[in-house]
Amino acid sequence: MPLDIDHVRSLFPAFSEPKLAERPFFDNAGGSYPCRFVTERLERFYRERKVQPYEAYEASRVAGEEMDEARLRLAAMLGVETEEVSFGPSTTQNTYVLAQAFRQWLSPGDAIVVTNQDHEANSGPWRRLADEGIEVREWRLDPETGHLDPGDLPPLLDGAKLLCFPHCSNVVAEINDVAAITAHAHEAGAVVCVDGVSYAPHGFPNVGALGADIYLFSAYKTYGPHQGIMVIRRALGEALPNQGHYFNGDTLYKRFTPAGPDHAQVAASAGMADYVDTLYAELGLPHADPAERCAAVHDAMRAREVDLLGPLLDFVGSRNSLRLLGPNDPSVRAPTVAVLTARPGGEIAAELATHDINAAGGDFYAVRPLEAMRIDPGHGILRMSFTHYTTEAEVDRLITALDHVL
Ligand SMILES: Cc1ncc(COP(=O)(O)O)c(C=O)c1O
Image 1 (cartoon, rainbow, N blue to C red):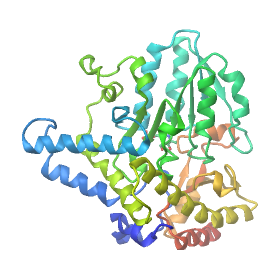
Image 2: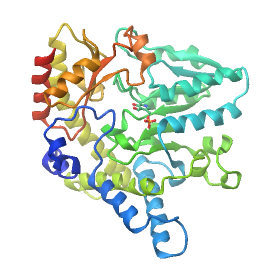
Image 3: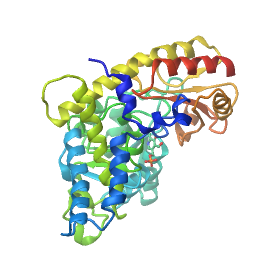
């Protein structure tokens, strides 16, 4: 059964705000609207339990319980152990801390592989390991299509200890086959770190099934609060040196989060699990475990997005003046549609705003991918990104507005 879009939108306070609801939102890859389960939990936490958690008194006890609930329920959805999920201020901060752990763990002369398709968050911190004598190899995208070819990997992985790559890039949007690439890296003896930030908003993946050793995403793009969520599988998490306080080193989820947790936002993250469960209930499917429920919701979101993508990609394809980044087949990409326009991307986005369309232009911290595709980051691209909660009518309005401004 398809998602009931009116019900879906009723679960987002933003769609009841006239100033937002009247303007089709196409900057979701920058950050999604939060669902009401998250905003309600956040508000309740600040009102009723904004105290140091995990003490015996009532407010403190329920604060801690709600934080634990978030990790427990998200881990169950993602198909991993509860202790394997941790929260940091952002994905950029999380990769920075992880890179410090690898800095201590690797030895001079060891090799790692990074891509030039990644957002800088999953690129720069790893490349800086070269300062320590680590050999940094680059898995390069195709300059025309932006595609990352797994066929290029064997020589790059030879003797490598770590492979970092995106589940899907925030500008190319092609979905990389994480399970196959990870299996390949494991065979070659490397661990993998996957940036799932641009993928997870389109359906939380089963990280356990994908096999990645590290999987990162940002909750503020997955209908949640402003947190970076990091799955780090136990074997690797216990092998890497602890980056937290020394006396917390035995607790896996504290090992790579040196910043004190944002209690309220961690607690509010349970609202993302409420959201998935609410959508699952609507699908009319039989009782299932959290990972199965999550998979069904993932598929329903993707099906809707693939349908919505068709007309927008057709429009882009019909304009010779536009260069689409990534594939034009909706089934192999996320609904993050970046195009190179004759005028700077930011200029077109500003004109779209005068037509009541909220979209974005710039380099999106994808400076390396843009340069690799021979696009001047200063000129930038226009990015129109949506999710399952977008309507057909909004896509039509975007296309009409594009027709005016291009
Ligand atoms: C693909 C991708 N990775 C990483 C990041 C960085 O995430 P954060 O803002 O949580 O540091 C972003 C942010 O836009 C992104 O799009």
